[in-house]
Each structure stands twice: as C-alpha cells, then as structure tokens.
Length: 295
Image (tube, rainbow, N blue to C red):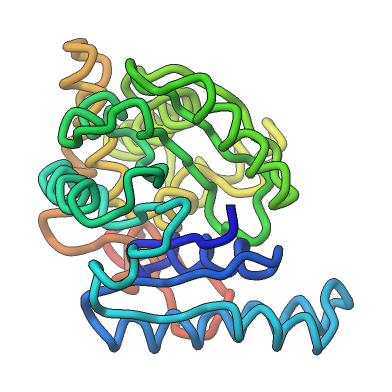
C-alpha cells in the first residue's frame, strides 16, 4: 500500500492522516468543509512541532510529513488512487452507511475500505457495499499519534487476506494491532463505556462528587485519567451513542445510558469539544474546574 485516503478531518481523521504521513505514506485527507481541512492541517502541524520539541522527530521529518498530506474536498477525486480508505466521520450509522455506499461506487475495485468506528457493526457497514470481503474495522485510539493500540475488527465477510494486510499495515505505523470479532462495542468500548456510564450513575445517585469519583479511579485503580474526565475527553455525545449501540445490540437493560448523560447531551454539554461537561474547560488551559452544576 502506498496511497491512503482518510475521510473526515476531525480529531480522529487528522490524527490518522498524521500517523500515515509520518510513516512515509501519501495521504489524501478528504472533508466536505475546507475550513475543517485548514483546521486539521494546523492541528497536525502543532502536533508535529510538539514531537520536534521533544526530540522524537527532526525538522526535516516534520516537513516531509506535511508534504505527504494532500487536503481535498471532493471525495470522488480523493479516492481515485487509494489503496486503502479509512473513514473517520462522525459516529452516526446513517452517515457511515451513506459514505460506504458512495465509496464502493467511487473507489477502485482493489481498494480496501476501513472504518474507524468505535462501536457500529462492521458487518452492517460492509452490507452497504458490493465488496464486503474488503471491509474492515480499523479502530485507532485518541490521540492517534500517541496511543499504540489499533483494534482490527473483522466483519462477517472480511477476508483473511484483508485482515492480515491491515494487521501488518498497523505494525508499519508502529502500532500494536489486536484482532477482534464484530460484536457491539468490540472489546475496548464494550468494557470502557459501561464503566464510564456506571461512574456517571455514581454521580447521578449522589454516591460521590466529580473529583472524588475520578480520584478514586486514578489513585485506587492506577487509571491515568478518571472516568468522568475521560468521558469529557471522548465527548459525551459519543459516549451516549456507544451506550445506545450496546443497548440495542445486546437488548440488556444494564447497558441503558444514565439519565444524567442523556440530559447533558440534550443540553449541549458535551465535554471538551463544547467547553463544558463534568468539568469546565478554558481554551489553552490544562486546569480542570468542576462544572458549576456539580458544585
């Protein structure tokens, strides 16, 4: 594989583009909004500067990485030469199905179609195409340039050849791929999201406060970040979406999202991305302040 197309210039998309380009691949970064592409390139540049400052990357490597990223707003042109397409759009079933139907029509017959979905069925996404054997999950973790794990998720029809190819490719990116099967939430979010949801229930039921819950998990369980802070970092809307996938997929009431989570998303309190969730966030600051409603 030489040519990679990434669909979506958001947090995950720009991170995926960054990692592929840093490892020598030509990357076309596609987003319908040119402003999103401009923002993505600024973010990638800032992250590369951080690597240079830490001595993890040379200035020449940084410049080479940026030269290998080609922003584009037209998806048809952006996938014309792709060996692999990695979709990193919003975690929305209808949107992903539409994107994969379009990609199937636009991309060369040889192209592997991967999705960075964190919970949606690979089999369902693959069924929107005429090439289900070439559809696979490639779930990177946030922040992509830092986190080592890639969940490689096989759909019902994903071929052995495609799976082996993506496992090998992930290692070329200096990542650790783990092969998993296509069940709701896969492994990472099947375990993580119920924990986050339970932490929100503990707050909702008055068991303890925001900082206290996070402190217990950080100091008692050696988690680098408490579950409520992590929920803010992921995005409360994303957490809610994944919980609903788990609830629908398993039909078990234990996966019902906490009413507090539902209300916060309805109110637009989504965490870091909106400036407030369980904590309040000041742009450019690393200091966390418990949101006013939880004081």
